[in-house]
Length: 133
Image (cartoon, rainbow, N blue to C red; front, top):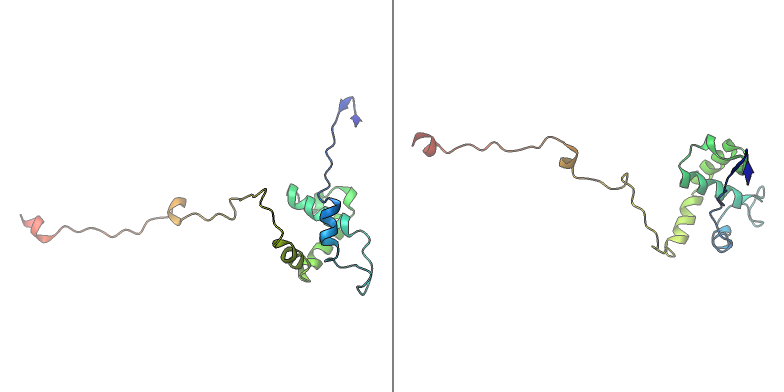
């Protein structure tokens, strides 16, 4: 892509391969067998959620290619309330390949003393025999 005289390499931000999408698409609302409206854009929506999780951006900063940020957020919250994300996680947990494992400091708890908390120590008293002698 050429913009303002500077070559910009645009990285493909799609998260799901066709094989990955095939594994989860049957677990999501909006299938022809479901009541209510049909969600033809489930894949785009899941891509938007994965993008937000990976980049860590606020919902308001969601790129326009994913649609209206508020609609994406409301749908995300609705799926969370209905347990959709939990069902997907449960279905996929047995298939986890630990090829990449990330541990963030928010999930690693340190002992209270490592954070500078005051230590509760017992005062050591000298025996009366040593004081006299």
